[in-house]
Every structure is written in C-alpha cells, then in structure tokens.
Picture 1 (cartoon, rainbow, N blue to C red):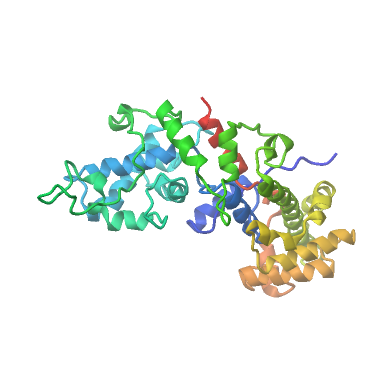
Picture 2 (spheres, one colour):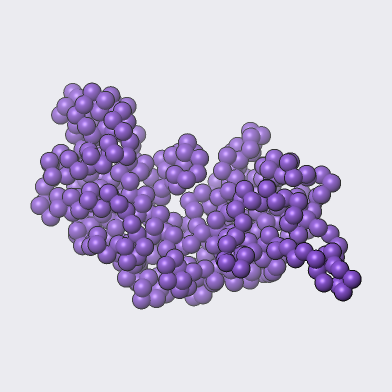
Length: 412
C-alpha cells in the first residue's frame, strides 16, 4: 500500500528566517532543494497578496482598524512612538482573539508569554492590503509601504479631525491621499471597547472584502486573478479538492486553466525532487558514513515516483516562463530529475542526478551546510540529519489551504 502524501506548505524566506524555517518544519518539509521558487511564483499568480504567514480574512480589517485607532490618538501616539504602539496593539489583539488551536489567531502563544508577535499581522498582511486595494493607491497604482506608514505618521489624513484647511475660496490647500480605501467599514463597537473578538465577518465587512478580492489582478496581463474568479463564483472547495480538480478549475479562465495544469505537474516534480534529495542523504549516511539511518526516505521515494512520476515527467519546463515562473538554475536540476525518471533508475545516487543536485545544493548553501558532497564538510552536515525526524516529501500546495480558509470566511 502506498503511503498517503500530505500537502506541504513552505515558509517565505523574505520574512524572519528563524520563524519562517520553523513554520516550514511544522507544515511539511524544509526547502532543501529550492522548489520554493515554484511555490512562490505560482501562488502569487493565482492568489495575489497571500502569504503562508496569514490565517484568517478578517485580519485584513483588524490591521487597518488598529492603525486608524492609533492615528486618531494624536495625544497618545506621537510619530516616534507609532511602531511600538502598533506592536503593543497587535499583542493585545492576539489576547482578544480565540485561544483555540486551529482558529488562526496569530501570535497566540507569544501573547500568553507577554512577548510581541514576531511576525505581526501588520507585516504578514501588508502586501495583501496593497494587492487587494485596502490601502489607497496613488495615480500610478503604488501603495505605501509599511515603513512609509511610520515615516509619514503625522501626515495621514485619517489622523486629522475636522475639515481640511482651505483658502478664502474654500479650495483645499493640501489634498492628502488617505491611507486606506474610503469604503473601509468602521470597526464594530466591540473592537474599540477591548472586548473579545472573533473571525466571523459582519455583512458590510464581507461585502467590502468581497469587492476588494474581486478586483485582484493576475501579474503580467492584468486580467482578473484566479482568486477573483473563485470569489465571484462563491466557491468553497472541500479540503480533498486541489485547485486543479475539475470542480475548481472550471472557474478559471483559459490562461489560468493551462497554468493550473502546469502547476499540478510542477507540484509533482517538486515532490519527486524533494524525495530524491532525502533518499540521497539517507543513502550516503549508510553507504559512506557507516550510519544506520533505516530506509524510510528511500522507500518513500519509490512511493512518490509511483504516484507523481508520470506528472513530473509531463511538465515542459520551457513553458514555465509563459506563466510568469522563472526559476533560474533550478531548471537544469529539474530537467535532470526528469531524465532520471525517464531512465527508470532507482538509485538516488545515480551520477546523472546526484551530480546536479550536489552542485545545486553547494550553490545554495555553501560547502559547510551542504549534505550531498563527499567532502568532510558534507559528512559533518549529514551527521546532524535525522531520517526519523525529517518529514516525508510531498507536493507543494501554492497556499491553497489558506485560500480555501479565506473562501470559507467569505461565506455567509
């Protein structure tokens, strides 16, 4: 019986490295071979603004509500104090949201210890606020960065009460672009009173976010995104349905349908490449290092090839740029993995795939951290690798589980 392969999510290296790595471990496998490039490019194409550090849709309102409340507190929050004030507000928010596993409260455990949230919602959702139009855009379509939020703290109109300054003819002397979309719903009374909060959306909040998501655009051609298509259809896919399943892909336009099928095959190729790497390290531990790691990952490699080999071979790597997916040197490595599959070779140390994988790992990690080289450094790196503690390789999911949660949040 073949083992069941789970969907593995990956952390984004752009955020705090230590916590990002911890998140990768908790959701599947580490990105040892660089397939994060595939994950990120396709996820950004299909689901603009999303990030694996996100959890629930209502945070896209919690963040601007908190910032607006601090901006209006002119007497209490000065420009130089804004960053610290927002940090404390986000700590308090974590304490007011459900203290239940699986609910999606960001920073729940650190808040209990009285520590600031290391990747706060205002950081993990900031790109989403821009991509979804919650932040107001300038005439060129640009939105303020999080750093600009603090740098211009005393200039955002949300912090100014009363009428704008005008001349004798009632013309506004300085029209300032608001920080947030003018249709942003006001926070409910419970938000300002310090009461417990939940992730359920009120009707006006749901309408606002639905409108914002409907306006998300696909990178490149500017057409409505796959996320927008799913929102328009009122889709709420089950956990057993990947985005390329028949019931889901039917909502995509022709360009995204083709891209989704390539993403499916890329996910399979990523699974084989990950499994091949782990099996190679395990084989080296036994064959070169005199260790007894067991055969967990080598046996799993066979199961992955059985399940994903055909799709992995089917992917035409030359078609990826048409989807906006550019993977640089990883393309050559994946081509060698495909050749290894075509040759039906079972040895993970076959020279035609071991050489390219080793070169790629050395390039990414350097000689002291790479595990595949036959050098003394490679042996030292392998000594710290534990087969039983390393998650079995599976396909990348392109943030699909997060998007399903967002779609569920939109449902009445």
